[in-house]
Length: 294
Image (cartoon, rainbow, N blue to C red; front, side, top):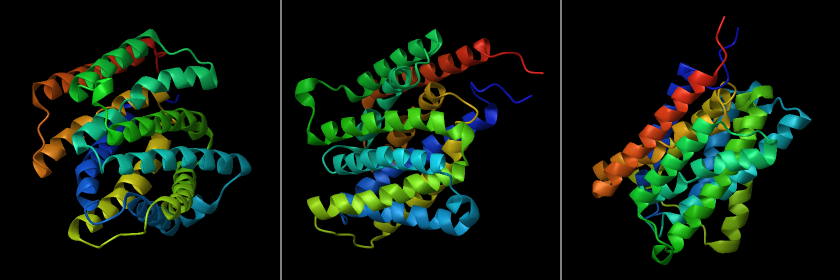
């Protein structure tokens, strides 16, 4: 019998790995943006990711049904909005703060899921989401009067990524994860240049950090990560996946401290601890409520 959909060890570990990779991209991309325009970087990143998926998984990536194409495009539009807003926001805010504001999508997933699928979240999931929100607020210390343009752009990115998680939960069980990853990457690669031509002058210098950020961002953080995410969400709920991916800003803070020498202080330690507590509560609740295996 298939392991319960609330989560498996391998799916959970895969999502933690994704969170670590995504965490590294925050300081890497911020350094790359010294020599590249935000939309130019997003365009190149997702073009490379689409090419990598098409070359490595040619048959699976291009084998698409009408339903698969619909969900791939929907996921791609959410991903494009999130990636563009997040990258543009990194020009005006710190890498660690950007990561924690992005992770506010954790709060939005159960509510978005309720609106879209009419599935009521478990009580433990709601409690965990509230604790995660408190942790994020503690780390960012965000106040309405203290939000700059970078914070606001990143907040919009959180809304887009929250919707992405919900749609992925609906699409993943019935579609090839590689196919979904390819079409959402390709959609983003097509949408970003249109936005770029309207907003900024194309600019992308091939410095060590732009090359590093492009390779990690396209191959590991996009092509590999989204294929794994689509697979993992066959075995776990959107709320549970979102809470595990909430570890992303914790990794981002660690990498930002190592690479950019950013410091989150005592608030960062308290907030990170609250996020980890939320993940544990979600996992315990999922295991407790799951039907017994045979």
